[in-house]
Image (cartoon, rainbow over all chains, first blue to last red):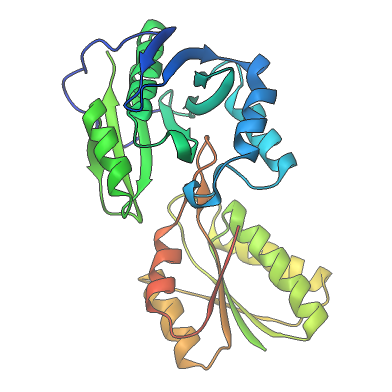
Length: 176
Length: 122
């Protein structure tokens, strides 16, 4: 089965692969590492501290059991995850979730006090590098049309806008 | 209250039907179900309509069932605003594999265009 999404003809360049350490614009040392089911308690804590204003299209859910259910799905073995760590705490999480068409949907969440410091850009790039290592080809995402900051971030990483007809904007990138 | 439910036969439409019927039974709403075609739903309209009628009968609700043709959003707004409904209920979109909500085109159209208050179910 194939989707009807359009993807860039050209594959993106090679992305950096996890694990790696960056210094953010506020001088903080941030570790970017691949994540799996063993990290779900850490992620649960991160999402419980999450600012409701930074939610996007219904995720992360608000109630604890709903966050747990959502993390179970997101952390299934067929999906790829990466976490940004600072001083032993998860401060950002990004995921590539397999859809029914064999493509992968991307989302990212960064705690508010770590936003605007370049962590999101590096974290997404690192997860895409992880995706290239695992042989992923097509990655897509949706973003609310008023969220200019997120759209600019995705474009900086290499995503291109492919659909503006629906309520949300759809963006795609080809990894290989 | 006079309630119009738009129903496409999609998964969330069945959830919308269940919630609307439950409310109608408790509050004594006068309910109309408007059924329409959706490219994402493979079941024929006849099957959807008989399933809707069966669920209404199970709940003991005496509701009108109608079919919409043409531009679904436009037809729903015309019916809701033109026949003095108090509320228009539709399924509010779908969830991606990752869990993000994507608002459907019918939901978007009625939210932007209906003067009747709209309830989105998900």
